[in-house]
Amino acid sequence: MALVVQKYGGTSVGSTERIKHVADRIISSVEQGNQVVTVVSAMGKTTDELVSLVGEVTAQPSKREMDMLLSTGEQVSISLLTMALQERGYRAVSLTGWQAGIQTEQAHGNARITGIDVERINSYLEDGMIVIVAGFQGVSEGEEITTLGRGGSDTTAVALAAAVSAERCDIFTDVTGVYTTDPRYVSKARKLASISYDEMLEMANLGAGVLHPRAVEFAKNHKVKLMVASSMVEEEGTVIEEEVSMEKDLVVRGIAFESDVTKVTVSGLPNDLATLPSLFTILSEHGINVDIIIQNETGKETTTISFSISDDIRQETVAVLEENKHRLHFEAVDCEQNLAKVSIVGSGMVSNPGVAARMFQLLAKEDVKVKMVSTSEIKVSTVIEEAVMVKAVEALHEEFQLAEEVLSI
Ligand code: ADP
Ligand code: ASP
Ligand code: MG
Image (cartoon, rainbow, N blue to C red; front, side, top):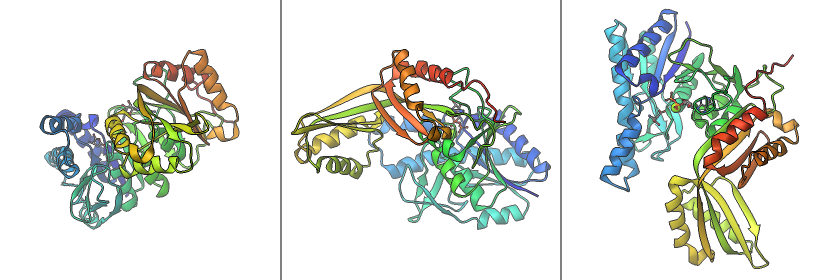
């Protein structure tokens, strides 16, 4: 008998019809002889709707109450799914994050899982029950409800799979696997048979929302066999694993992108050793997450530093800088909005010089101005105008021949 963890995302449990369909899928796995632990997200757009309710009440919600609210979404779907299983004559039990023993840091809204006490889950499994766990939530040492960050149910599933030593963790979603790029934007995107943990981690961190980055990190660190597949279509999914055997020759495996990027430029800073550490210490002390950083000496005395952030923290970032003007001694802060980050990812880049050059040449040919660049061994990221984001992704997809399958011999 194999123990498997399955996860179903928001769209997959978006209606009672879909919940009943998920119940049938779980039953089919049980009938094949598996023990099943299932993690579910909130129904459809529930979490977004809860967030927008907050906006009607306050502009500055407390993080504790946000978690209290957002964690209710998953409680609806676990109970309905469990009832659907019971209705079909199967013994099942739903568990919230804390009932499932999912311990996290205190950090409300973006807590990391620190450990899972699997005793309760194991005893239900030993008793032959199907266990349904609420994704995206846990409990802190201070017994407060926490959430794991948007998209965090994937991480619940992978962490549980590691904790109960499941044979594998299957993430069922609304696409049939991990594609070369988001298939909702690029019709020529191609489903990958497999992708390495490292490539998937970069893709997820760079905006490919199909998996929560921490889920991939967890899977890599705990060697969890991870698969992404459709909850609706019976089709082979994508395996995420250590070494990718097929398609070895591909230099670029995928393209990730994200919009709502803002470039912040702080000019007229003193050109001395203290500037860089002071600026970024102040930003980090306020929990401001900075992405790409560029520094330009503008003269002997002054320097300009630009960095990119997510647009939703623009106002807070500018306020923090203005509050600290007397410490940083800059002249001005400017924000350039409506930008996007487009990144090419592939472990084959390490041994292939010239990939970045090829990307820049292509973007220039397409009249796409690159405003910021950052590279690592397996990715090149560029910040460009949001208006040309999809055009750039499509052109890069073509340039690196991602629509075609390349098999290694
Ligand atoms: P779920 O609710 O099941 O967790 P998500 O919306 O979080 O689903 O993730 C699935 C979505 O991820 C897809 O609908 C797709 O638009 C998006 N996506 C982004 N990049 C990719 C990619 N490279 N491959 C597949 N899907 C992607
Ligand atoms: N319901 C949460 C969200 O919408 C968690 C998840 O779906 O993974 O972000
Ligand atoms: Mg998701």
